[in-house]
Length: 429
Ligand SMILES: CC(C)(COP(=O)(O)OP(=O)(O)OC[C@H]1O[C@@H](n2cnc3c(N)ncnc32)[C@H](O)[C@@H]1OP(=O)(O)O)[C@@H](O)C(=O)NCCC(=O)NCCS
Image 1 (cartoon, rainbow, N blue to C red):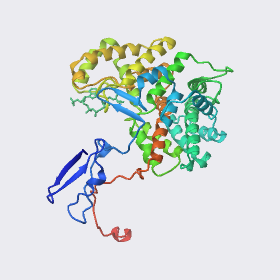
Image 2: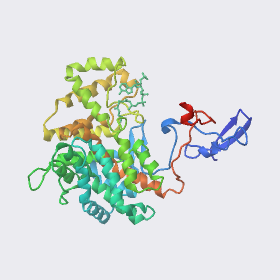
Image 3: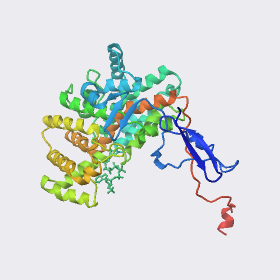
Image 4: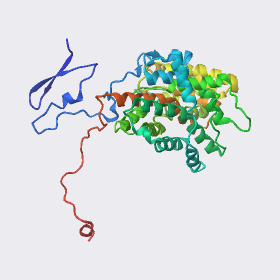
C-alpha cells in the first residue's frame, strides 16, 4: 500500500491526497493546493531548511539519536581506525572501496597533482602579510578555475574526475602556503615521496632541512581528523557547494563557496571557542563553578551539544584517543586534563544528561591542533582540506542527478507594492 497524507484546505473545503515517499512529501504536490485558480499554490516556509530535504543522496548517513555516522554505508569508527584519508576519499567519490590497482592509481594521481602553477604562488604572495588563511584559501581555490578553464565542461566524466583529483591534491598545498604566508616564511613545495599528510606537514613546517620527517603518530592523527571531517551530509557548506554547483559552474567555483560557508563561526569555528573556554577555566579546581554558571544559563559548555547528535558524537570518541596519541609525542597540555575532567563531570550531571548534551567533534580537535602548533585561524583550513572529498562527492552526485534544478528557493514577500517612483530632482526639490 502506498503511504499518503490527506490534507483538507479549510479555505476551500477541498481534500487532497499527497503521496509520502521516503518519509517526505513533494513540495510540488503542495503547490497544487490553491485557494483559487490564480493563487500561486501552497508552499512551505522553512528558514535554514531545517525540515526540508533538498536532494536524494547516497553519500553519508547520520542517525543523530543513536550517534551513527556512516560514509557510503561504512561506520566512521571502522574507517577512522582501519582506513586512510585517501581511501576514504576514493570511497566517498566513487561510492565503493577501491581494488588494490584502483587504490594505487588514485594515490599516485593525487600525489602527482600536488603542485600548483607558479602564478598561484605569486598571487598568494600578494595577500597582506596578516591575511586570514581561510580568505586566502577561498580566493585561491576559486582562482584555480582560471588555471583550468577545461573544468567548465562538467558533463564529461573524465574531466570531472581530473578536477576532483586536482582539488583533493592541491588543497593541502594552498592551505599550507596560506599558513606560511601568515608566518612570513617561504612557501615549501610539495614532496611527492611523502604520504598525503606527511607532505602536508612538510609544506607546513619544513625549514632548512633537506627532507622533512614527521612522527607517524602525528601523521596518523591528522589523517584521522581528515577522515572524521570528510563529509557530514547536507551541512551548510555542502549545501553551499550544491547550491552554487546547481548553476553548472565549474567545481573550483563551487568548492570556493563551500570554503566560504565553512569560514563562518557557526560552522567551522567551534573548536577555537572550546580552547578559549578551557583557558578561561584555567585549572581543574575551577570546573565546578564553571559548570554552575553553565547550568544557571550564563554561558554554554562549548564543544557540547549538537543540532543532529543527541547522543555521543561518534567522532568525539575517536578524536579523544587521537589527542592522547598526539600528546605522547608533543608532551601533555594542561588543558587536556581540564577537558577530560569537564567531560566526566558533565556526563554525570543531570542538566546535561536530561538535555542529551554530549561532547561533539570540536571538543578535543582544537587541543590536537594546538599541540601541533597551529594558530586558531588554521583550524578551519584543516577542516576544509578534510571536507574537500565530501564536497566533491556531493557535487558529483548533484551534477549527475536528473531531478536537480538550479537552486532557487521561494520567498514570502513582505515589502511594499506598486509605489510610484518620483525622480531625485523632484523628491529633493
Ligand atoms: C550545537 C548547538 C548550537 C545545538 O543547538 P540546538 O540543537 O539548537 O540546541 P538548543 O540550543 O535548542 O539546546 C537545547 C537545550 O540544551 C541547552 N544547551 C545546548 N547546548 C548547550 C551547551 N553547549 N551548554 C549548555 N547548555 C546547552 C540549551 O540551553 C537548551 O536548554 P533549555 O531547554 O533549558 O533551554 C548547541 O548545542 C551549542 O551551542 N553548543 C556549543 C557550541 C558547539 O560546540 N558547537 C559545535 C557544534 S559541532
